[in-house]
Length: 310
Image (tube, rainbow, N blue to C red):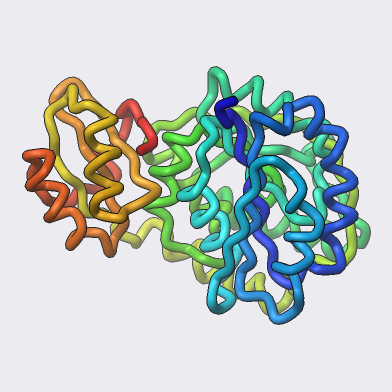
């Protein structure tokens, strides 16, 4: 049976919370169908036994993938790696503790049938209420800065559960630069620049203790990243190809070049095979095979295109 849904779980020092997270997820897996669902756990350079525990907790399922960053790179980097490896047309990125109730996952999958991005939203009456007044105040203040610097109208960019169609997810992953916790606002900023529709889904959640976010330390880093968004030149190497290039031929060439996580962005004029920023060397070989032209492109040229994951 083909895999239709990929659940990406970034995990940094999560050995104590993985088992409880799986128990919250288990009933939903039966609804999604375990034979059509893959679990991808990305250990983001943990210094505990997260990877070992992940194997114990999820290893019995029919489709699992466990990968480990050699060092702690940040949640954004871990999610992007999971997206690059995902095989399902529907991708759900979610926290290891499953604080967002997984019973919403089938609704997210249903919404992805007609919308590229379906982020969870914990907002009630224009606010997210955490377990402490300090976190509630900090969250509201941060969202004010997010809306100011990105132009998004979303009230909950930091929800730990997001649904994405695989094609748009691949493009957002290839373009993204922020590795830390501000990768969420960057995701929505890029989606807006690319003309991708966003449809938030109300979710229920439990404010589970043990988050790796540190308000003082991480807030300053996130603010610095937010201020850099509009100054960043989001440019990637691409192969310009014929508009009707066969996706199977592109896939074969990518495998030969040992490149993964790519996306074809089609317009009425051409097709652009978007490569990682360090993928120009591999792109040269693919250009010869596919009879394409290697160059760079930015957000304006990518906006509004039809996206197909490779």
